[in-house]
Amino acid sequence: MQSFSVRLLDWFAREGRHDLPWQHPRSAYRVWLSEIMLQQTRVQTVIPYFARFVAALPDLPALARAGSEEVMALWSGLGYYARARHLHAAAKQCVAHHGGELPDDFDALLALPGIGRSTAGAILSQAHGLKFPILDGNVRRVLARWRGIEGWPGAAAIERELWQLAQSLLPDEHLPDYAQGLMDLGATVCTRADPDCARCPLRADCVALRSLRTAELPASRPGKPLPRRACVMLVAFDGEGRVLLQKREAPGVWNGLWSLPEAPDAAMLDVFIRQHLHAPNAARALPAFEHVFSHYRLAIQPQRRDGVAPRPRVAESGPELRWAAPGEWPGIGLPAPVRKLLLSSLRAESPLSAKEFP
Image (cartoon, rainbow, N blue to C red; front, side, top):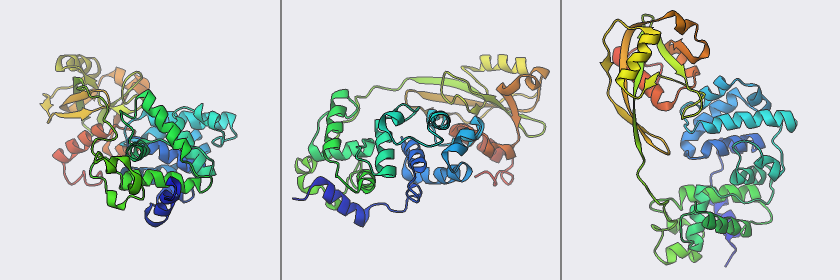
């Protein structure tokens, strides 16, 4: 029987994805950017964000020179915003210490913010053709099923076993295609649900298929219910149709982004309003919704206020608070659920004027 790598490379040549934007050209910067964007995010979601990002910031020095607000605006909607902050910080370190390029040394890559072992391996294998393994979620699933590895892949012992297996299977050549092929196989054939085993080049000796356990392997993460939190968000429009935004600071989610003012409950939001705003009109409750983060669920009750005017301290408060007209929203780093909330508020008042903000 042909080796694992030969079968995978043959399959990739016939059925793999050869038209992904980061493959043309397959530079270290483009591979790195794509790998960071693809963490926790599907390829089809990433493609337009990737295109927009590289059009604005085509290389690493451009990313390093960019302001944090531009970077966050380009990332806005992709979620997991720490990825963008780490990307920006790593670019600055590369300019300061590596001549404006990503290093081609594994340890130097691993020392950069946001780059773990698999991302470093992906950069070195795909951009430089070096013999380093990768182990993203798709690859973990392929290897766990093929070898029949029990246990949750995120557990330390199981992860070590998978890394050892990934290292042992590496070919001596065609490393860029091998790495992409392994990711493609997991993304398009060896999928989490309903894998297409008839199309898999590894089916002849796949332990999970042979034992009818593709639905069980790899094992799921031991589950526990996510805690639930609640907040009230203020959607405050002034007489010019501008909305009040507040800069999110660390610690906490969405830090570095602009969001809507929020409080744990309506009474505390009223305190904020009295301190910062003249709000002569009564509040209107908008439809509540829930947003799920990786570690908790947030129940959001939006409260709309119209005809709001700032107290003097708002104008003097520096970067924490700002008023933004709808035409400015596309260029501001807004969390995806906040952007959707704002656009739905705009459409509710004037559907025609909202058409330019799909």
